[in-house]
Image (cartoon, rainbow, N blue to C red; front, side, top):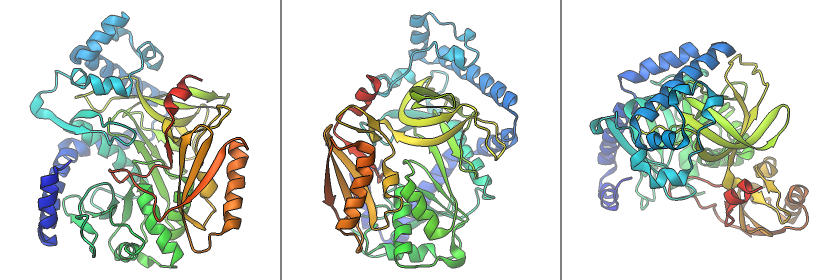
Length: 470
């Protein structure tokens, strides 16, 4: 993240010079992510996209063996862990064998980050970074450029399913501070020439400014949109509310990531643009990659890593619980059996109509912290569908200050009234019961995290502890 001094200097530059700064930063980003290895990796992913089930399992097992051996040989933390557990890395051949290794939690990564860096990767080849810190202190991370190339190649393969490629111009809605906060007039976006993307500011999306965003997006040339679903849904809400037409400029597809995609957001985006929404689940730690296909299923990118589910609920057909991830891509800081804090549902016997043979997640349910905990101890996730058809509400967020109370923060539209509120409360009661107290708070906007991300649930409870102590 840029220092306050750098941001202050950037903010005093005229827009033309800011564009140059963005272009230079974009070129550096392009170099790290789209170097010579990127196209090789993308070709490799495209070639393996249609492998049969047995070939997918064999390929994943081979990559797992390589990742385990690399970690055990070159990462101090894993050398110690294998020795302490009495495990021979040469005897880990597949996922069943991997489960002998203890789970790695975020706090351990935070405290022992230096010991998790591979000694086989020279310092000059390391790229430093950090996680977003949405639910706590950010994790210090180290990458290789090849690891970053894997991340963007996985995203590139998904774009290819919609006939899109690296050279297409697109609209990006991320957390970059590209427009000074003090700026009051458009343009609220900057052009990154190296990556052919227009970076739209998430920090200027006031009701009065959304028309400027919509009119810019209606200009020809944006082949697709990409970014935080909450930001894209805000613009799309304005488009629907005002009957604005994108016309021929409507995107071919919209790719969402970095936040849980809520049902109401998907409906708003599709309704405004007519474009399919393709979600992707990944994170800064580069331990997991899951891509939604044109049939709407989430496929584990098995070339990228292994996904396990720590079961909270299980039937003969599926298992729902916390995602445990083992990544293959990032050799600088490999994470084996890493507890992500995210919740997903894995289908046990699903065959996707798209024909891809990789494991299927029926949905990404969100973070552990996205649970509501009822007075009788039930843990309820994915409450966003309550608002899917509530067009009278622009945005909503659930705040849980205690186990016996929630507060629904909502941004109303002009037609919101007491009848709508009672209808929504009945929906909540049908899921949470009558013991919990429900408060309602009208707000002008739902506050974002400092990184621009939106949280559907904000809880003062230690939900992770409650869930794991079930």
